[in-house]
Image (tube, rainbow, N blue to C red; front, side):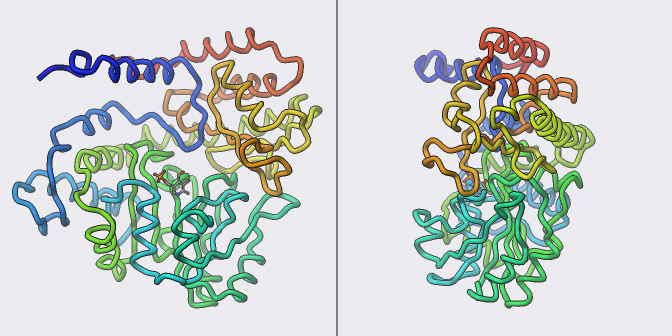
Length: 416
Ligand code: PLP
């Protein structure tokens, strides 16, 4: 019964260093967040020891009476939070959730219509090296060159031309809300199923800051660790008629034993997501992203070619467009890293630079909102980023300003 420190000092030291990194920098990767201590605690429990193949009340192992309680709580909370008829909380990740949906409702070779990866879609929406692009027949829709927003007329035309079996709405890098009514109407015109992958914006949906796809979609998938702020994992919501097929695609179709310690973390996160503190956090997340977009577009960084895709944001991220800047995505990411801000470079539509370099940055506010940032703090962050992207930036001064914000909002104060 040795502690981690005693048994494996090398791993313990790296974990401690990672905690230090998270505390001492500003985390602005749009897909990341800080899980609350209660979620970390749930994941570090003896539930990790338990095999529980099957579903609550119908397991293939004995001794599942307690994990049944936990998994049922997670299922009930997910259904109630999003108004869904059916929930499966077992997918190990967002990618697994999407795979399970495809396996349950599609056949190899079926056509899917999803957002192009280079325009903000996800790998699992039909990228050619992903199984979704290998096993299915993917067709991609795009954002408009003129304003960086979705062109629903193009989606409709592509749907009519290619007659997809499933249309996929959802994104990894897109700064605007989606029109699910329009997606549903297009799907109905061609007899397609509609899947919405709300991995990024599920926290906003839970608090009414983004339209809820559940009434419109046949199936909705999400991760539980992005704006939802829980443990790393996936979740599937569906109309009751698809429930059985989806459950059997997850287990035994794709996965063996569920991670009940992670499911406990999901249950805790879903409980928190129904509360006022979470709603306040999501409001600060969106307000923060709007401020970053506004201040960047009004700053003199614009004069050196720094723009914001679609001119702003409705959600928790801002896509910085560096196509007209001498600074590329890699250089901008490195420069922000050096002053203590973590973001990721991101291809913009019709990016002239190679995918490993890119001409964009994806800047997200969920983790800082969780850390307690308010609008004044986000305004300061925006000014620091705008300054850092100019040629005459003062790295030492900007680094000091980052450290002042870090000190103002301690992260995991009770954790060692
Ligand atoms: N779907 C979308 C829209 C995503 O952005 C992501 C992750 O970035 C995923 C699915 C996959 O989630 P995971 O990394 O948990 O497999």
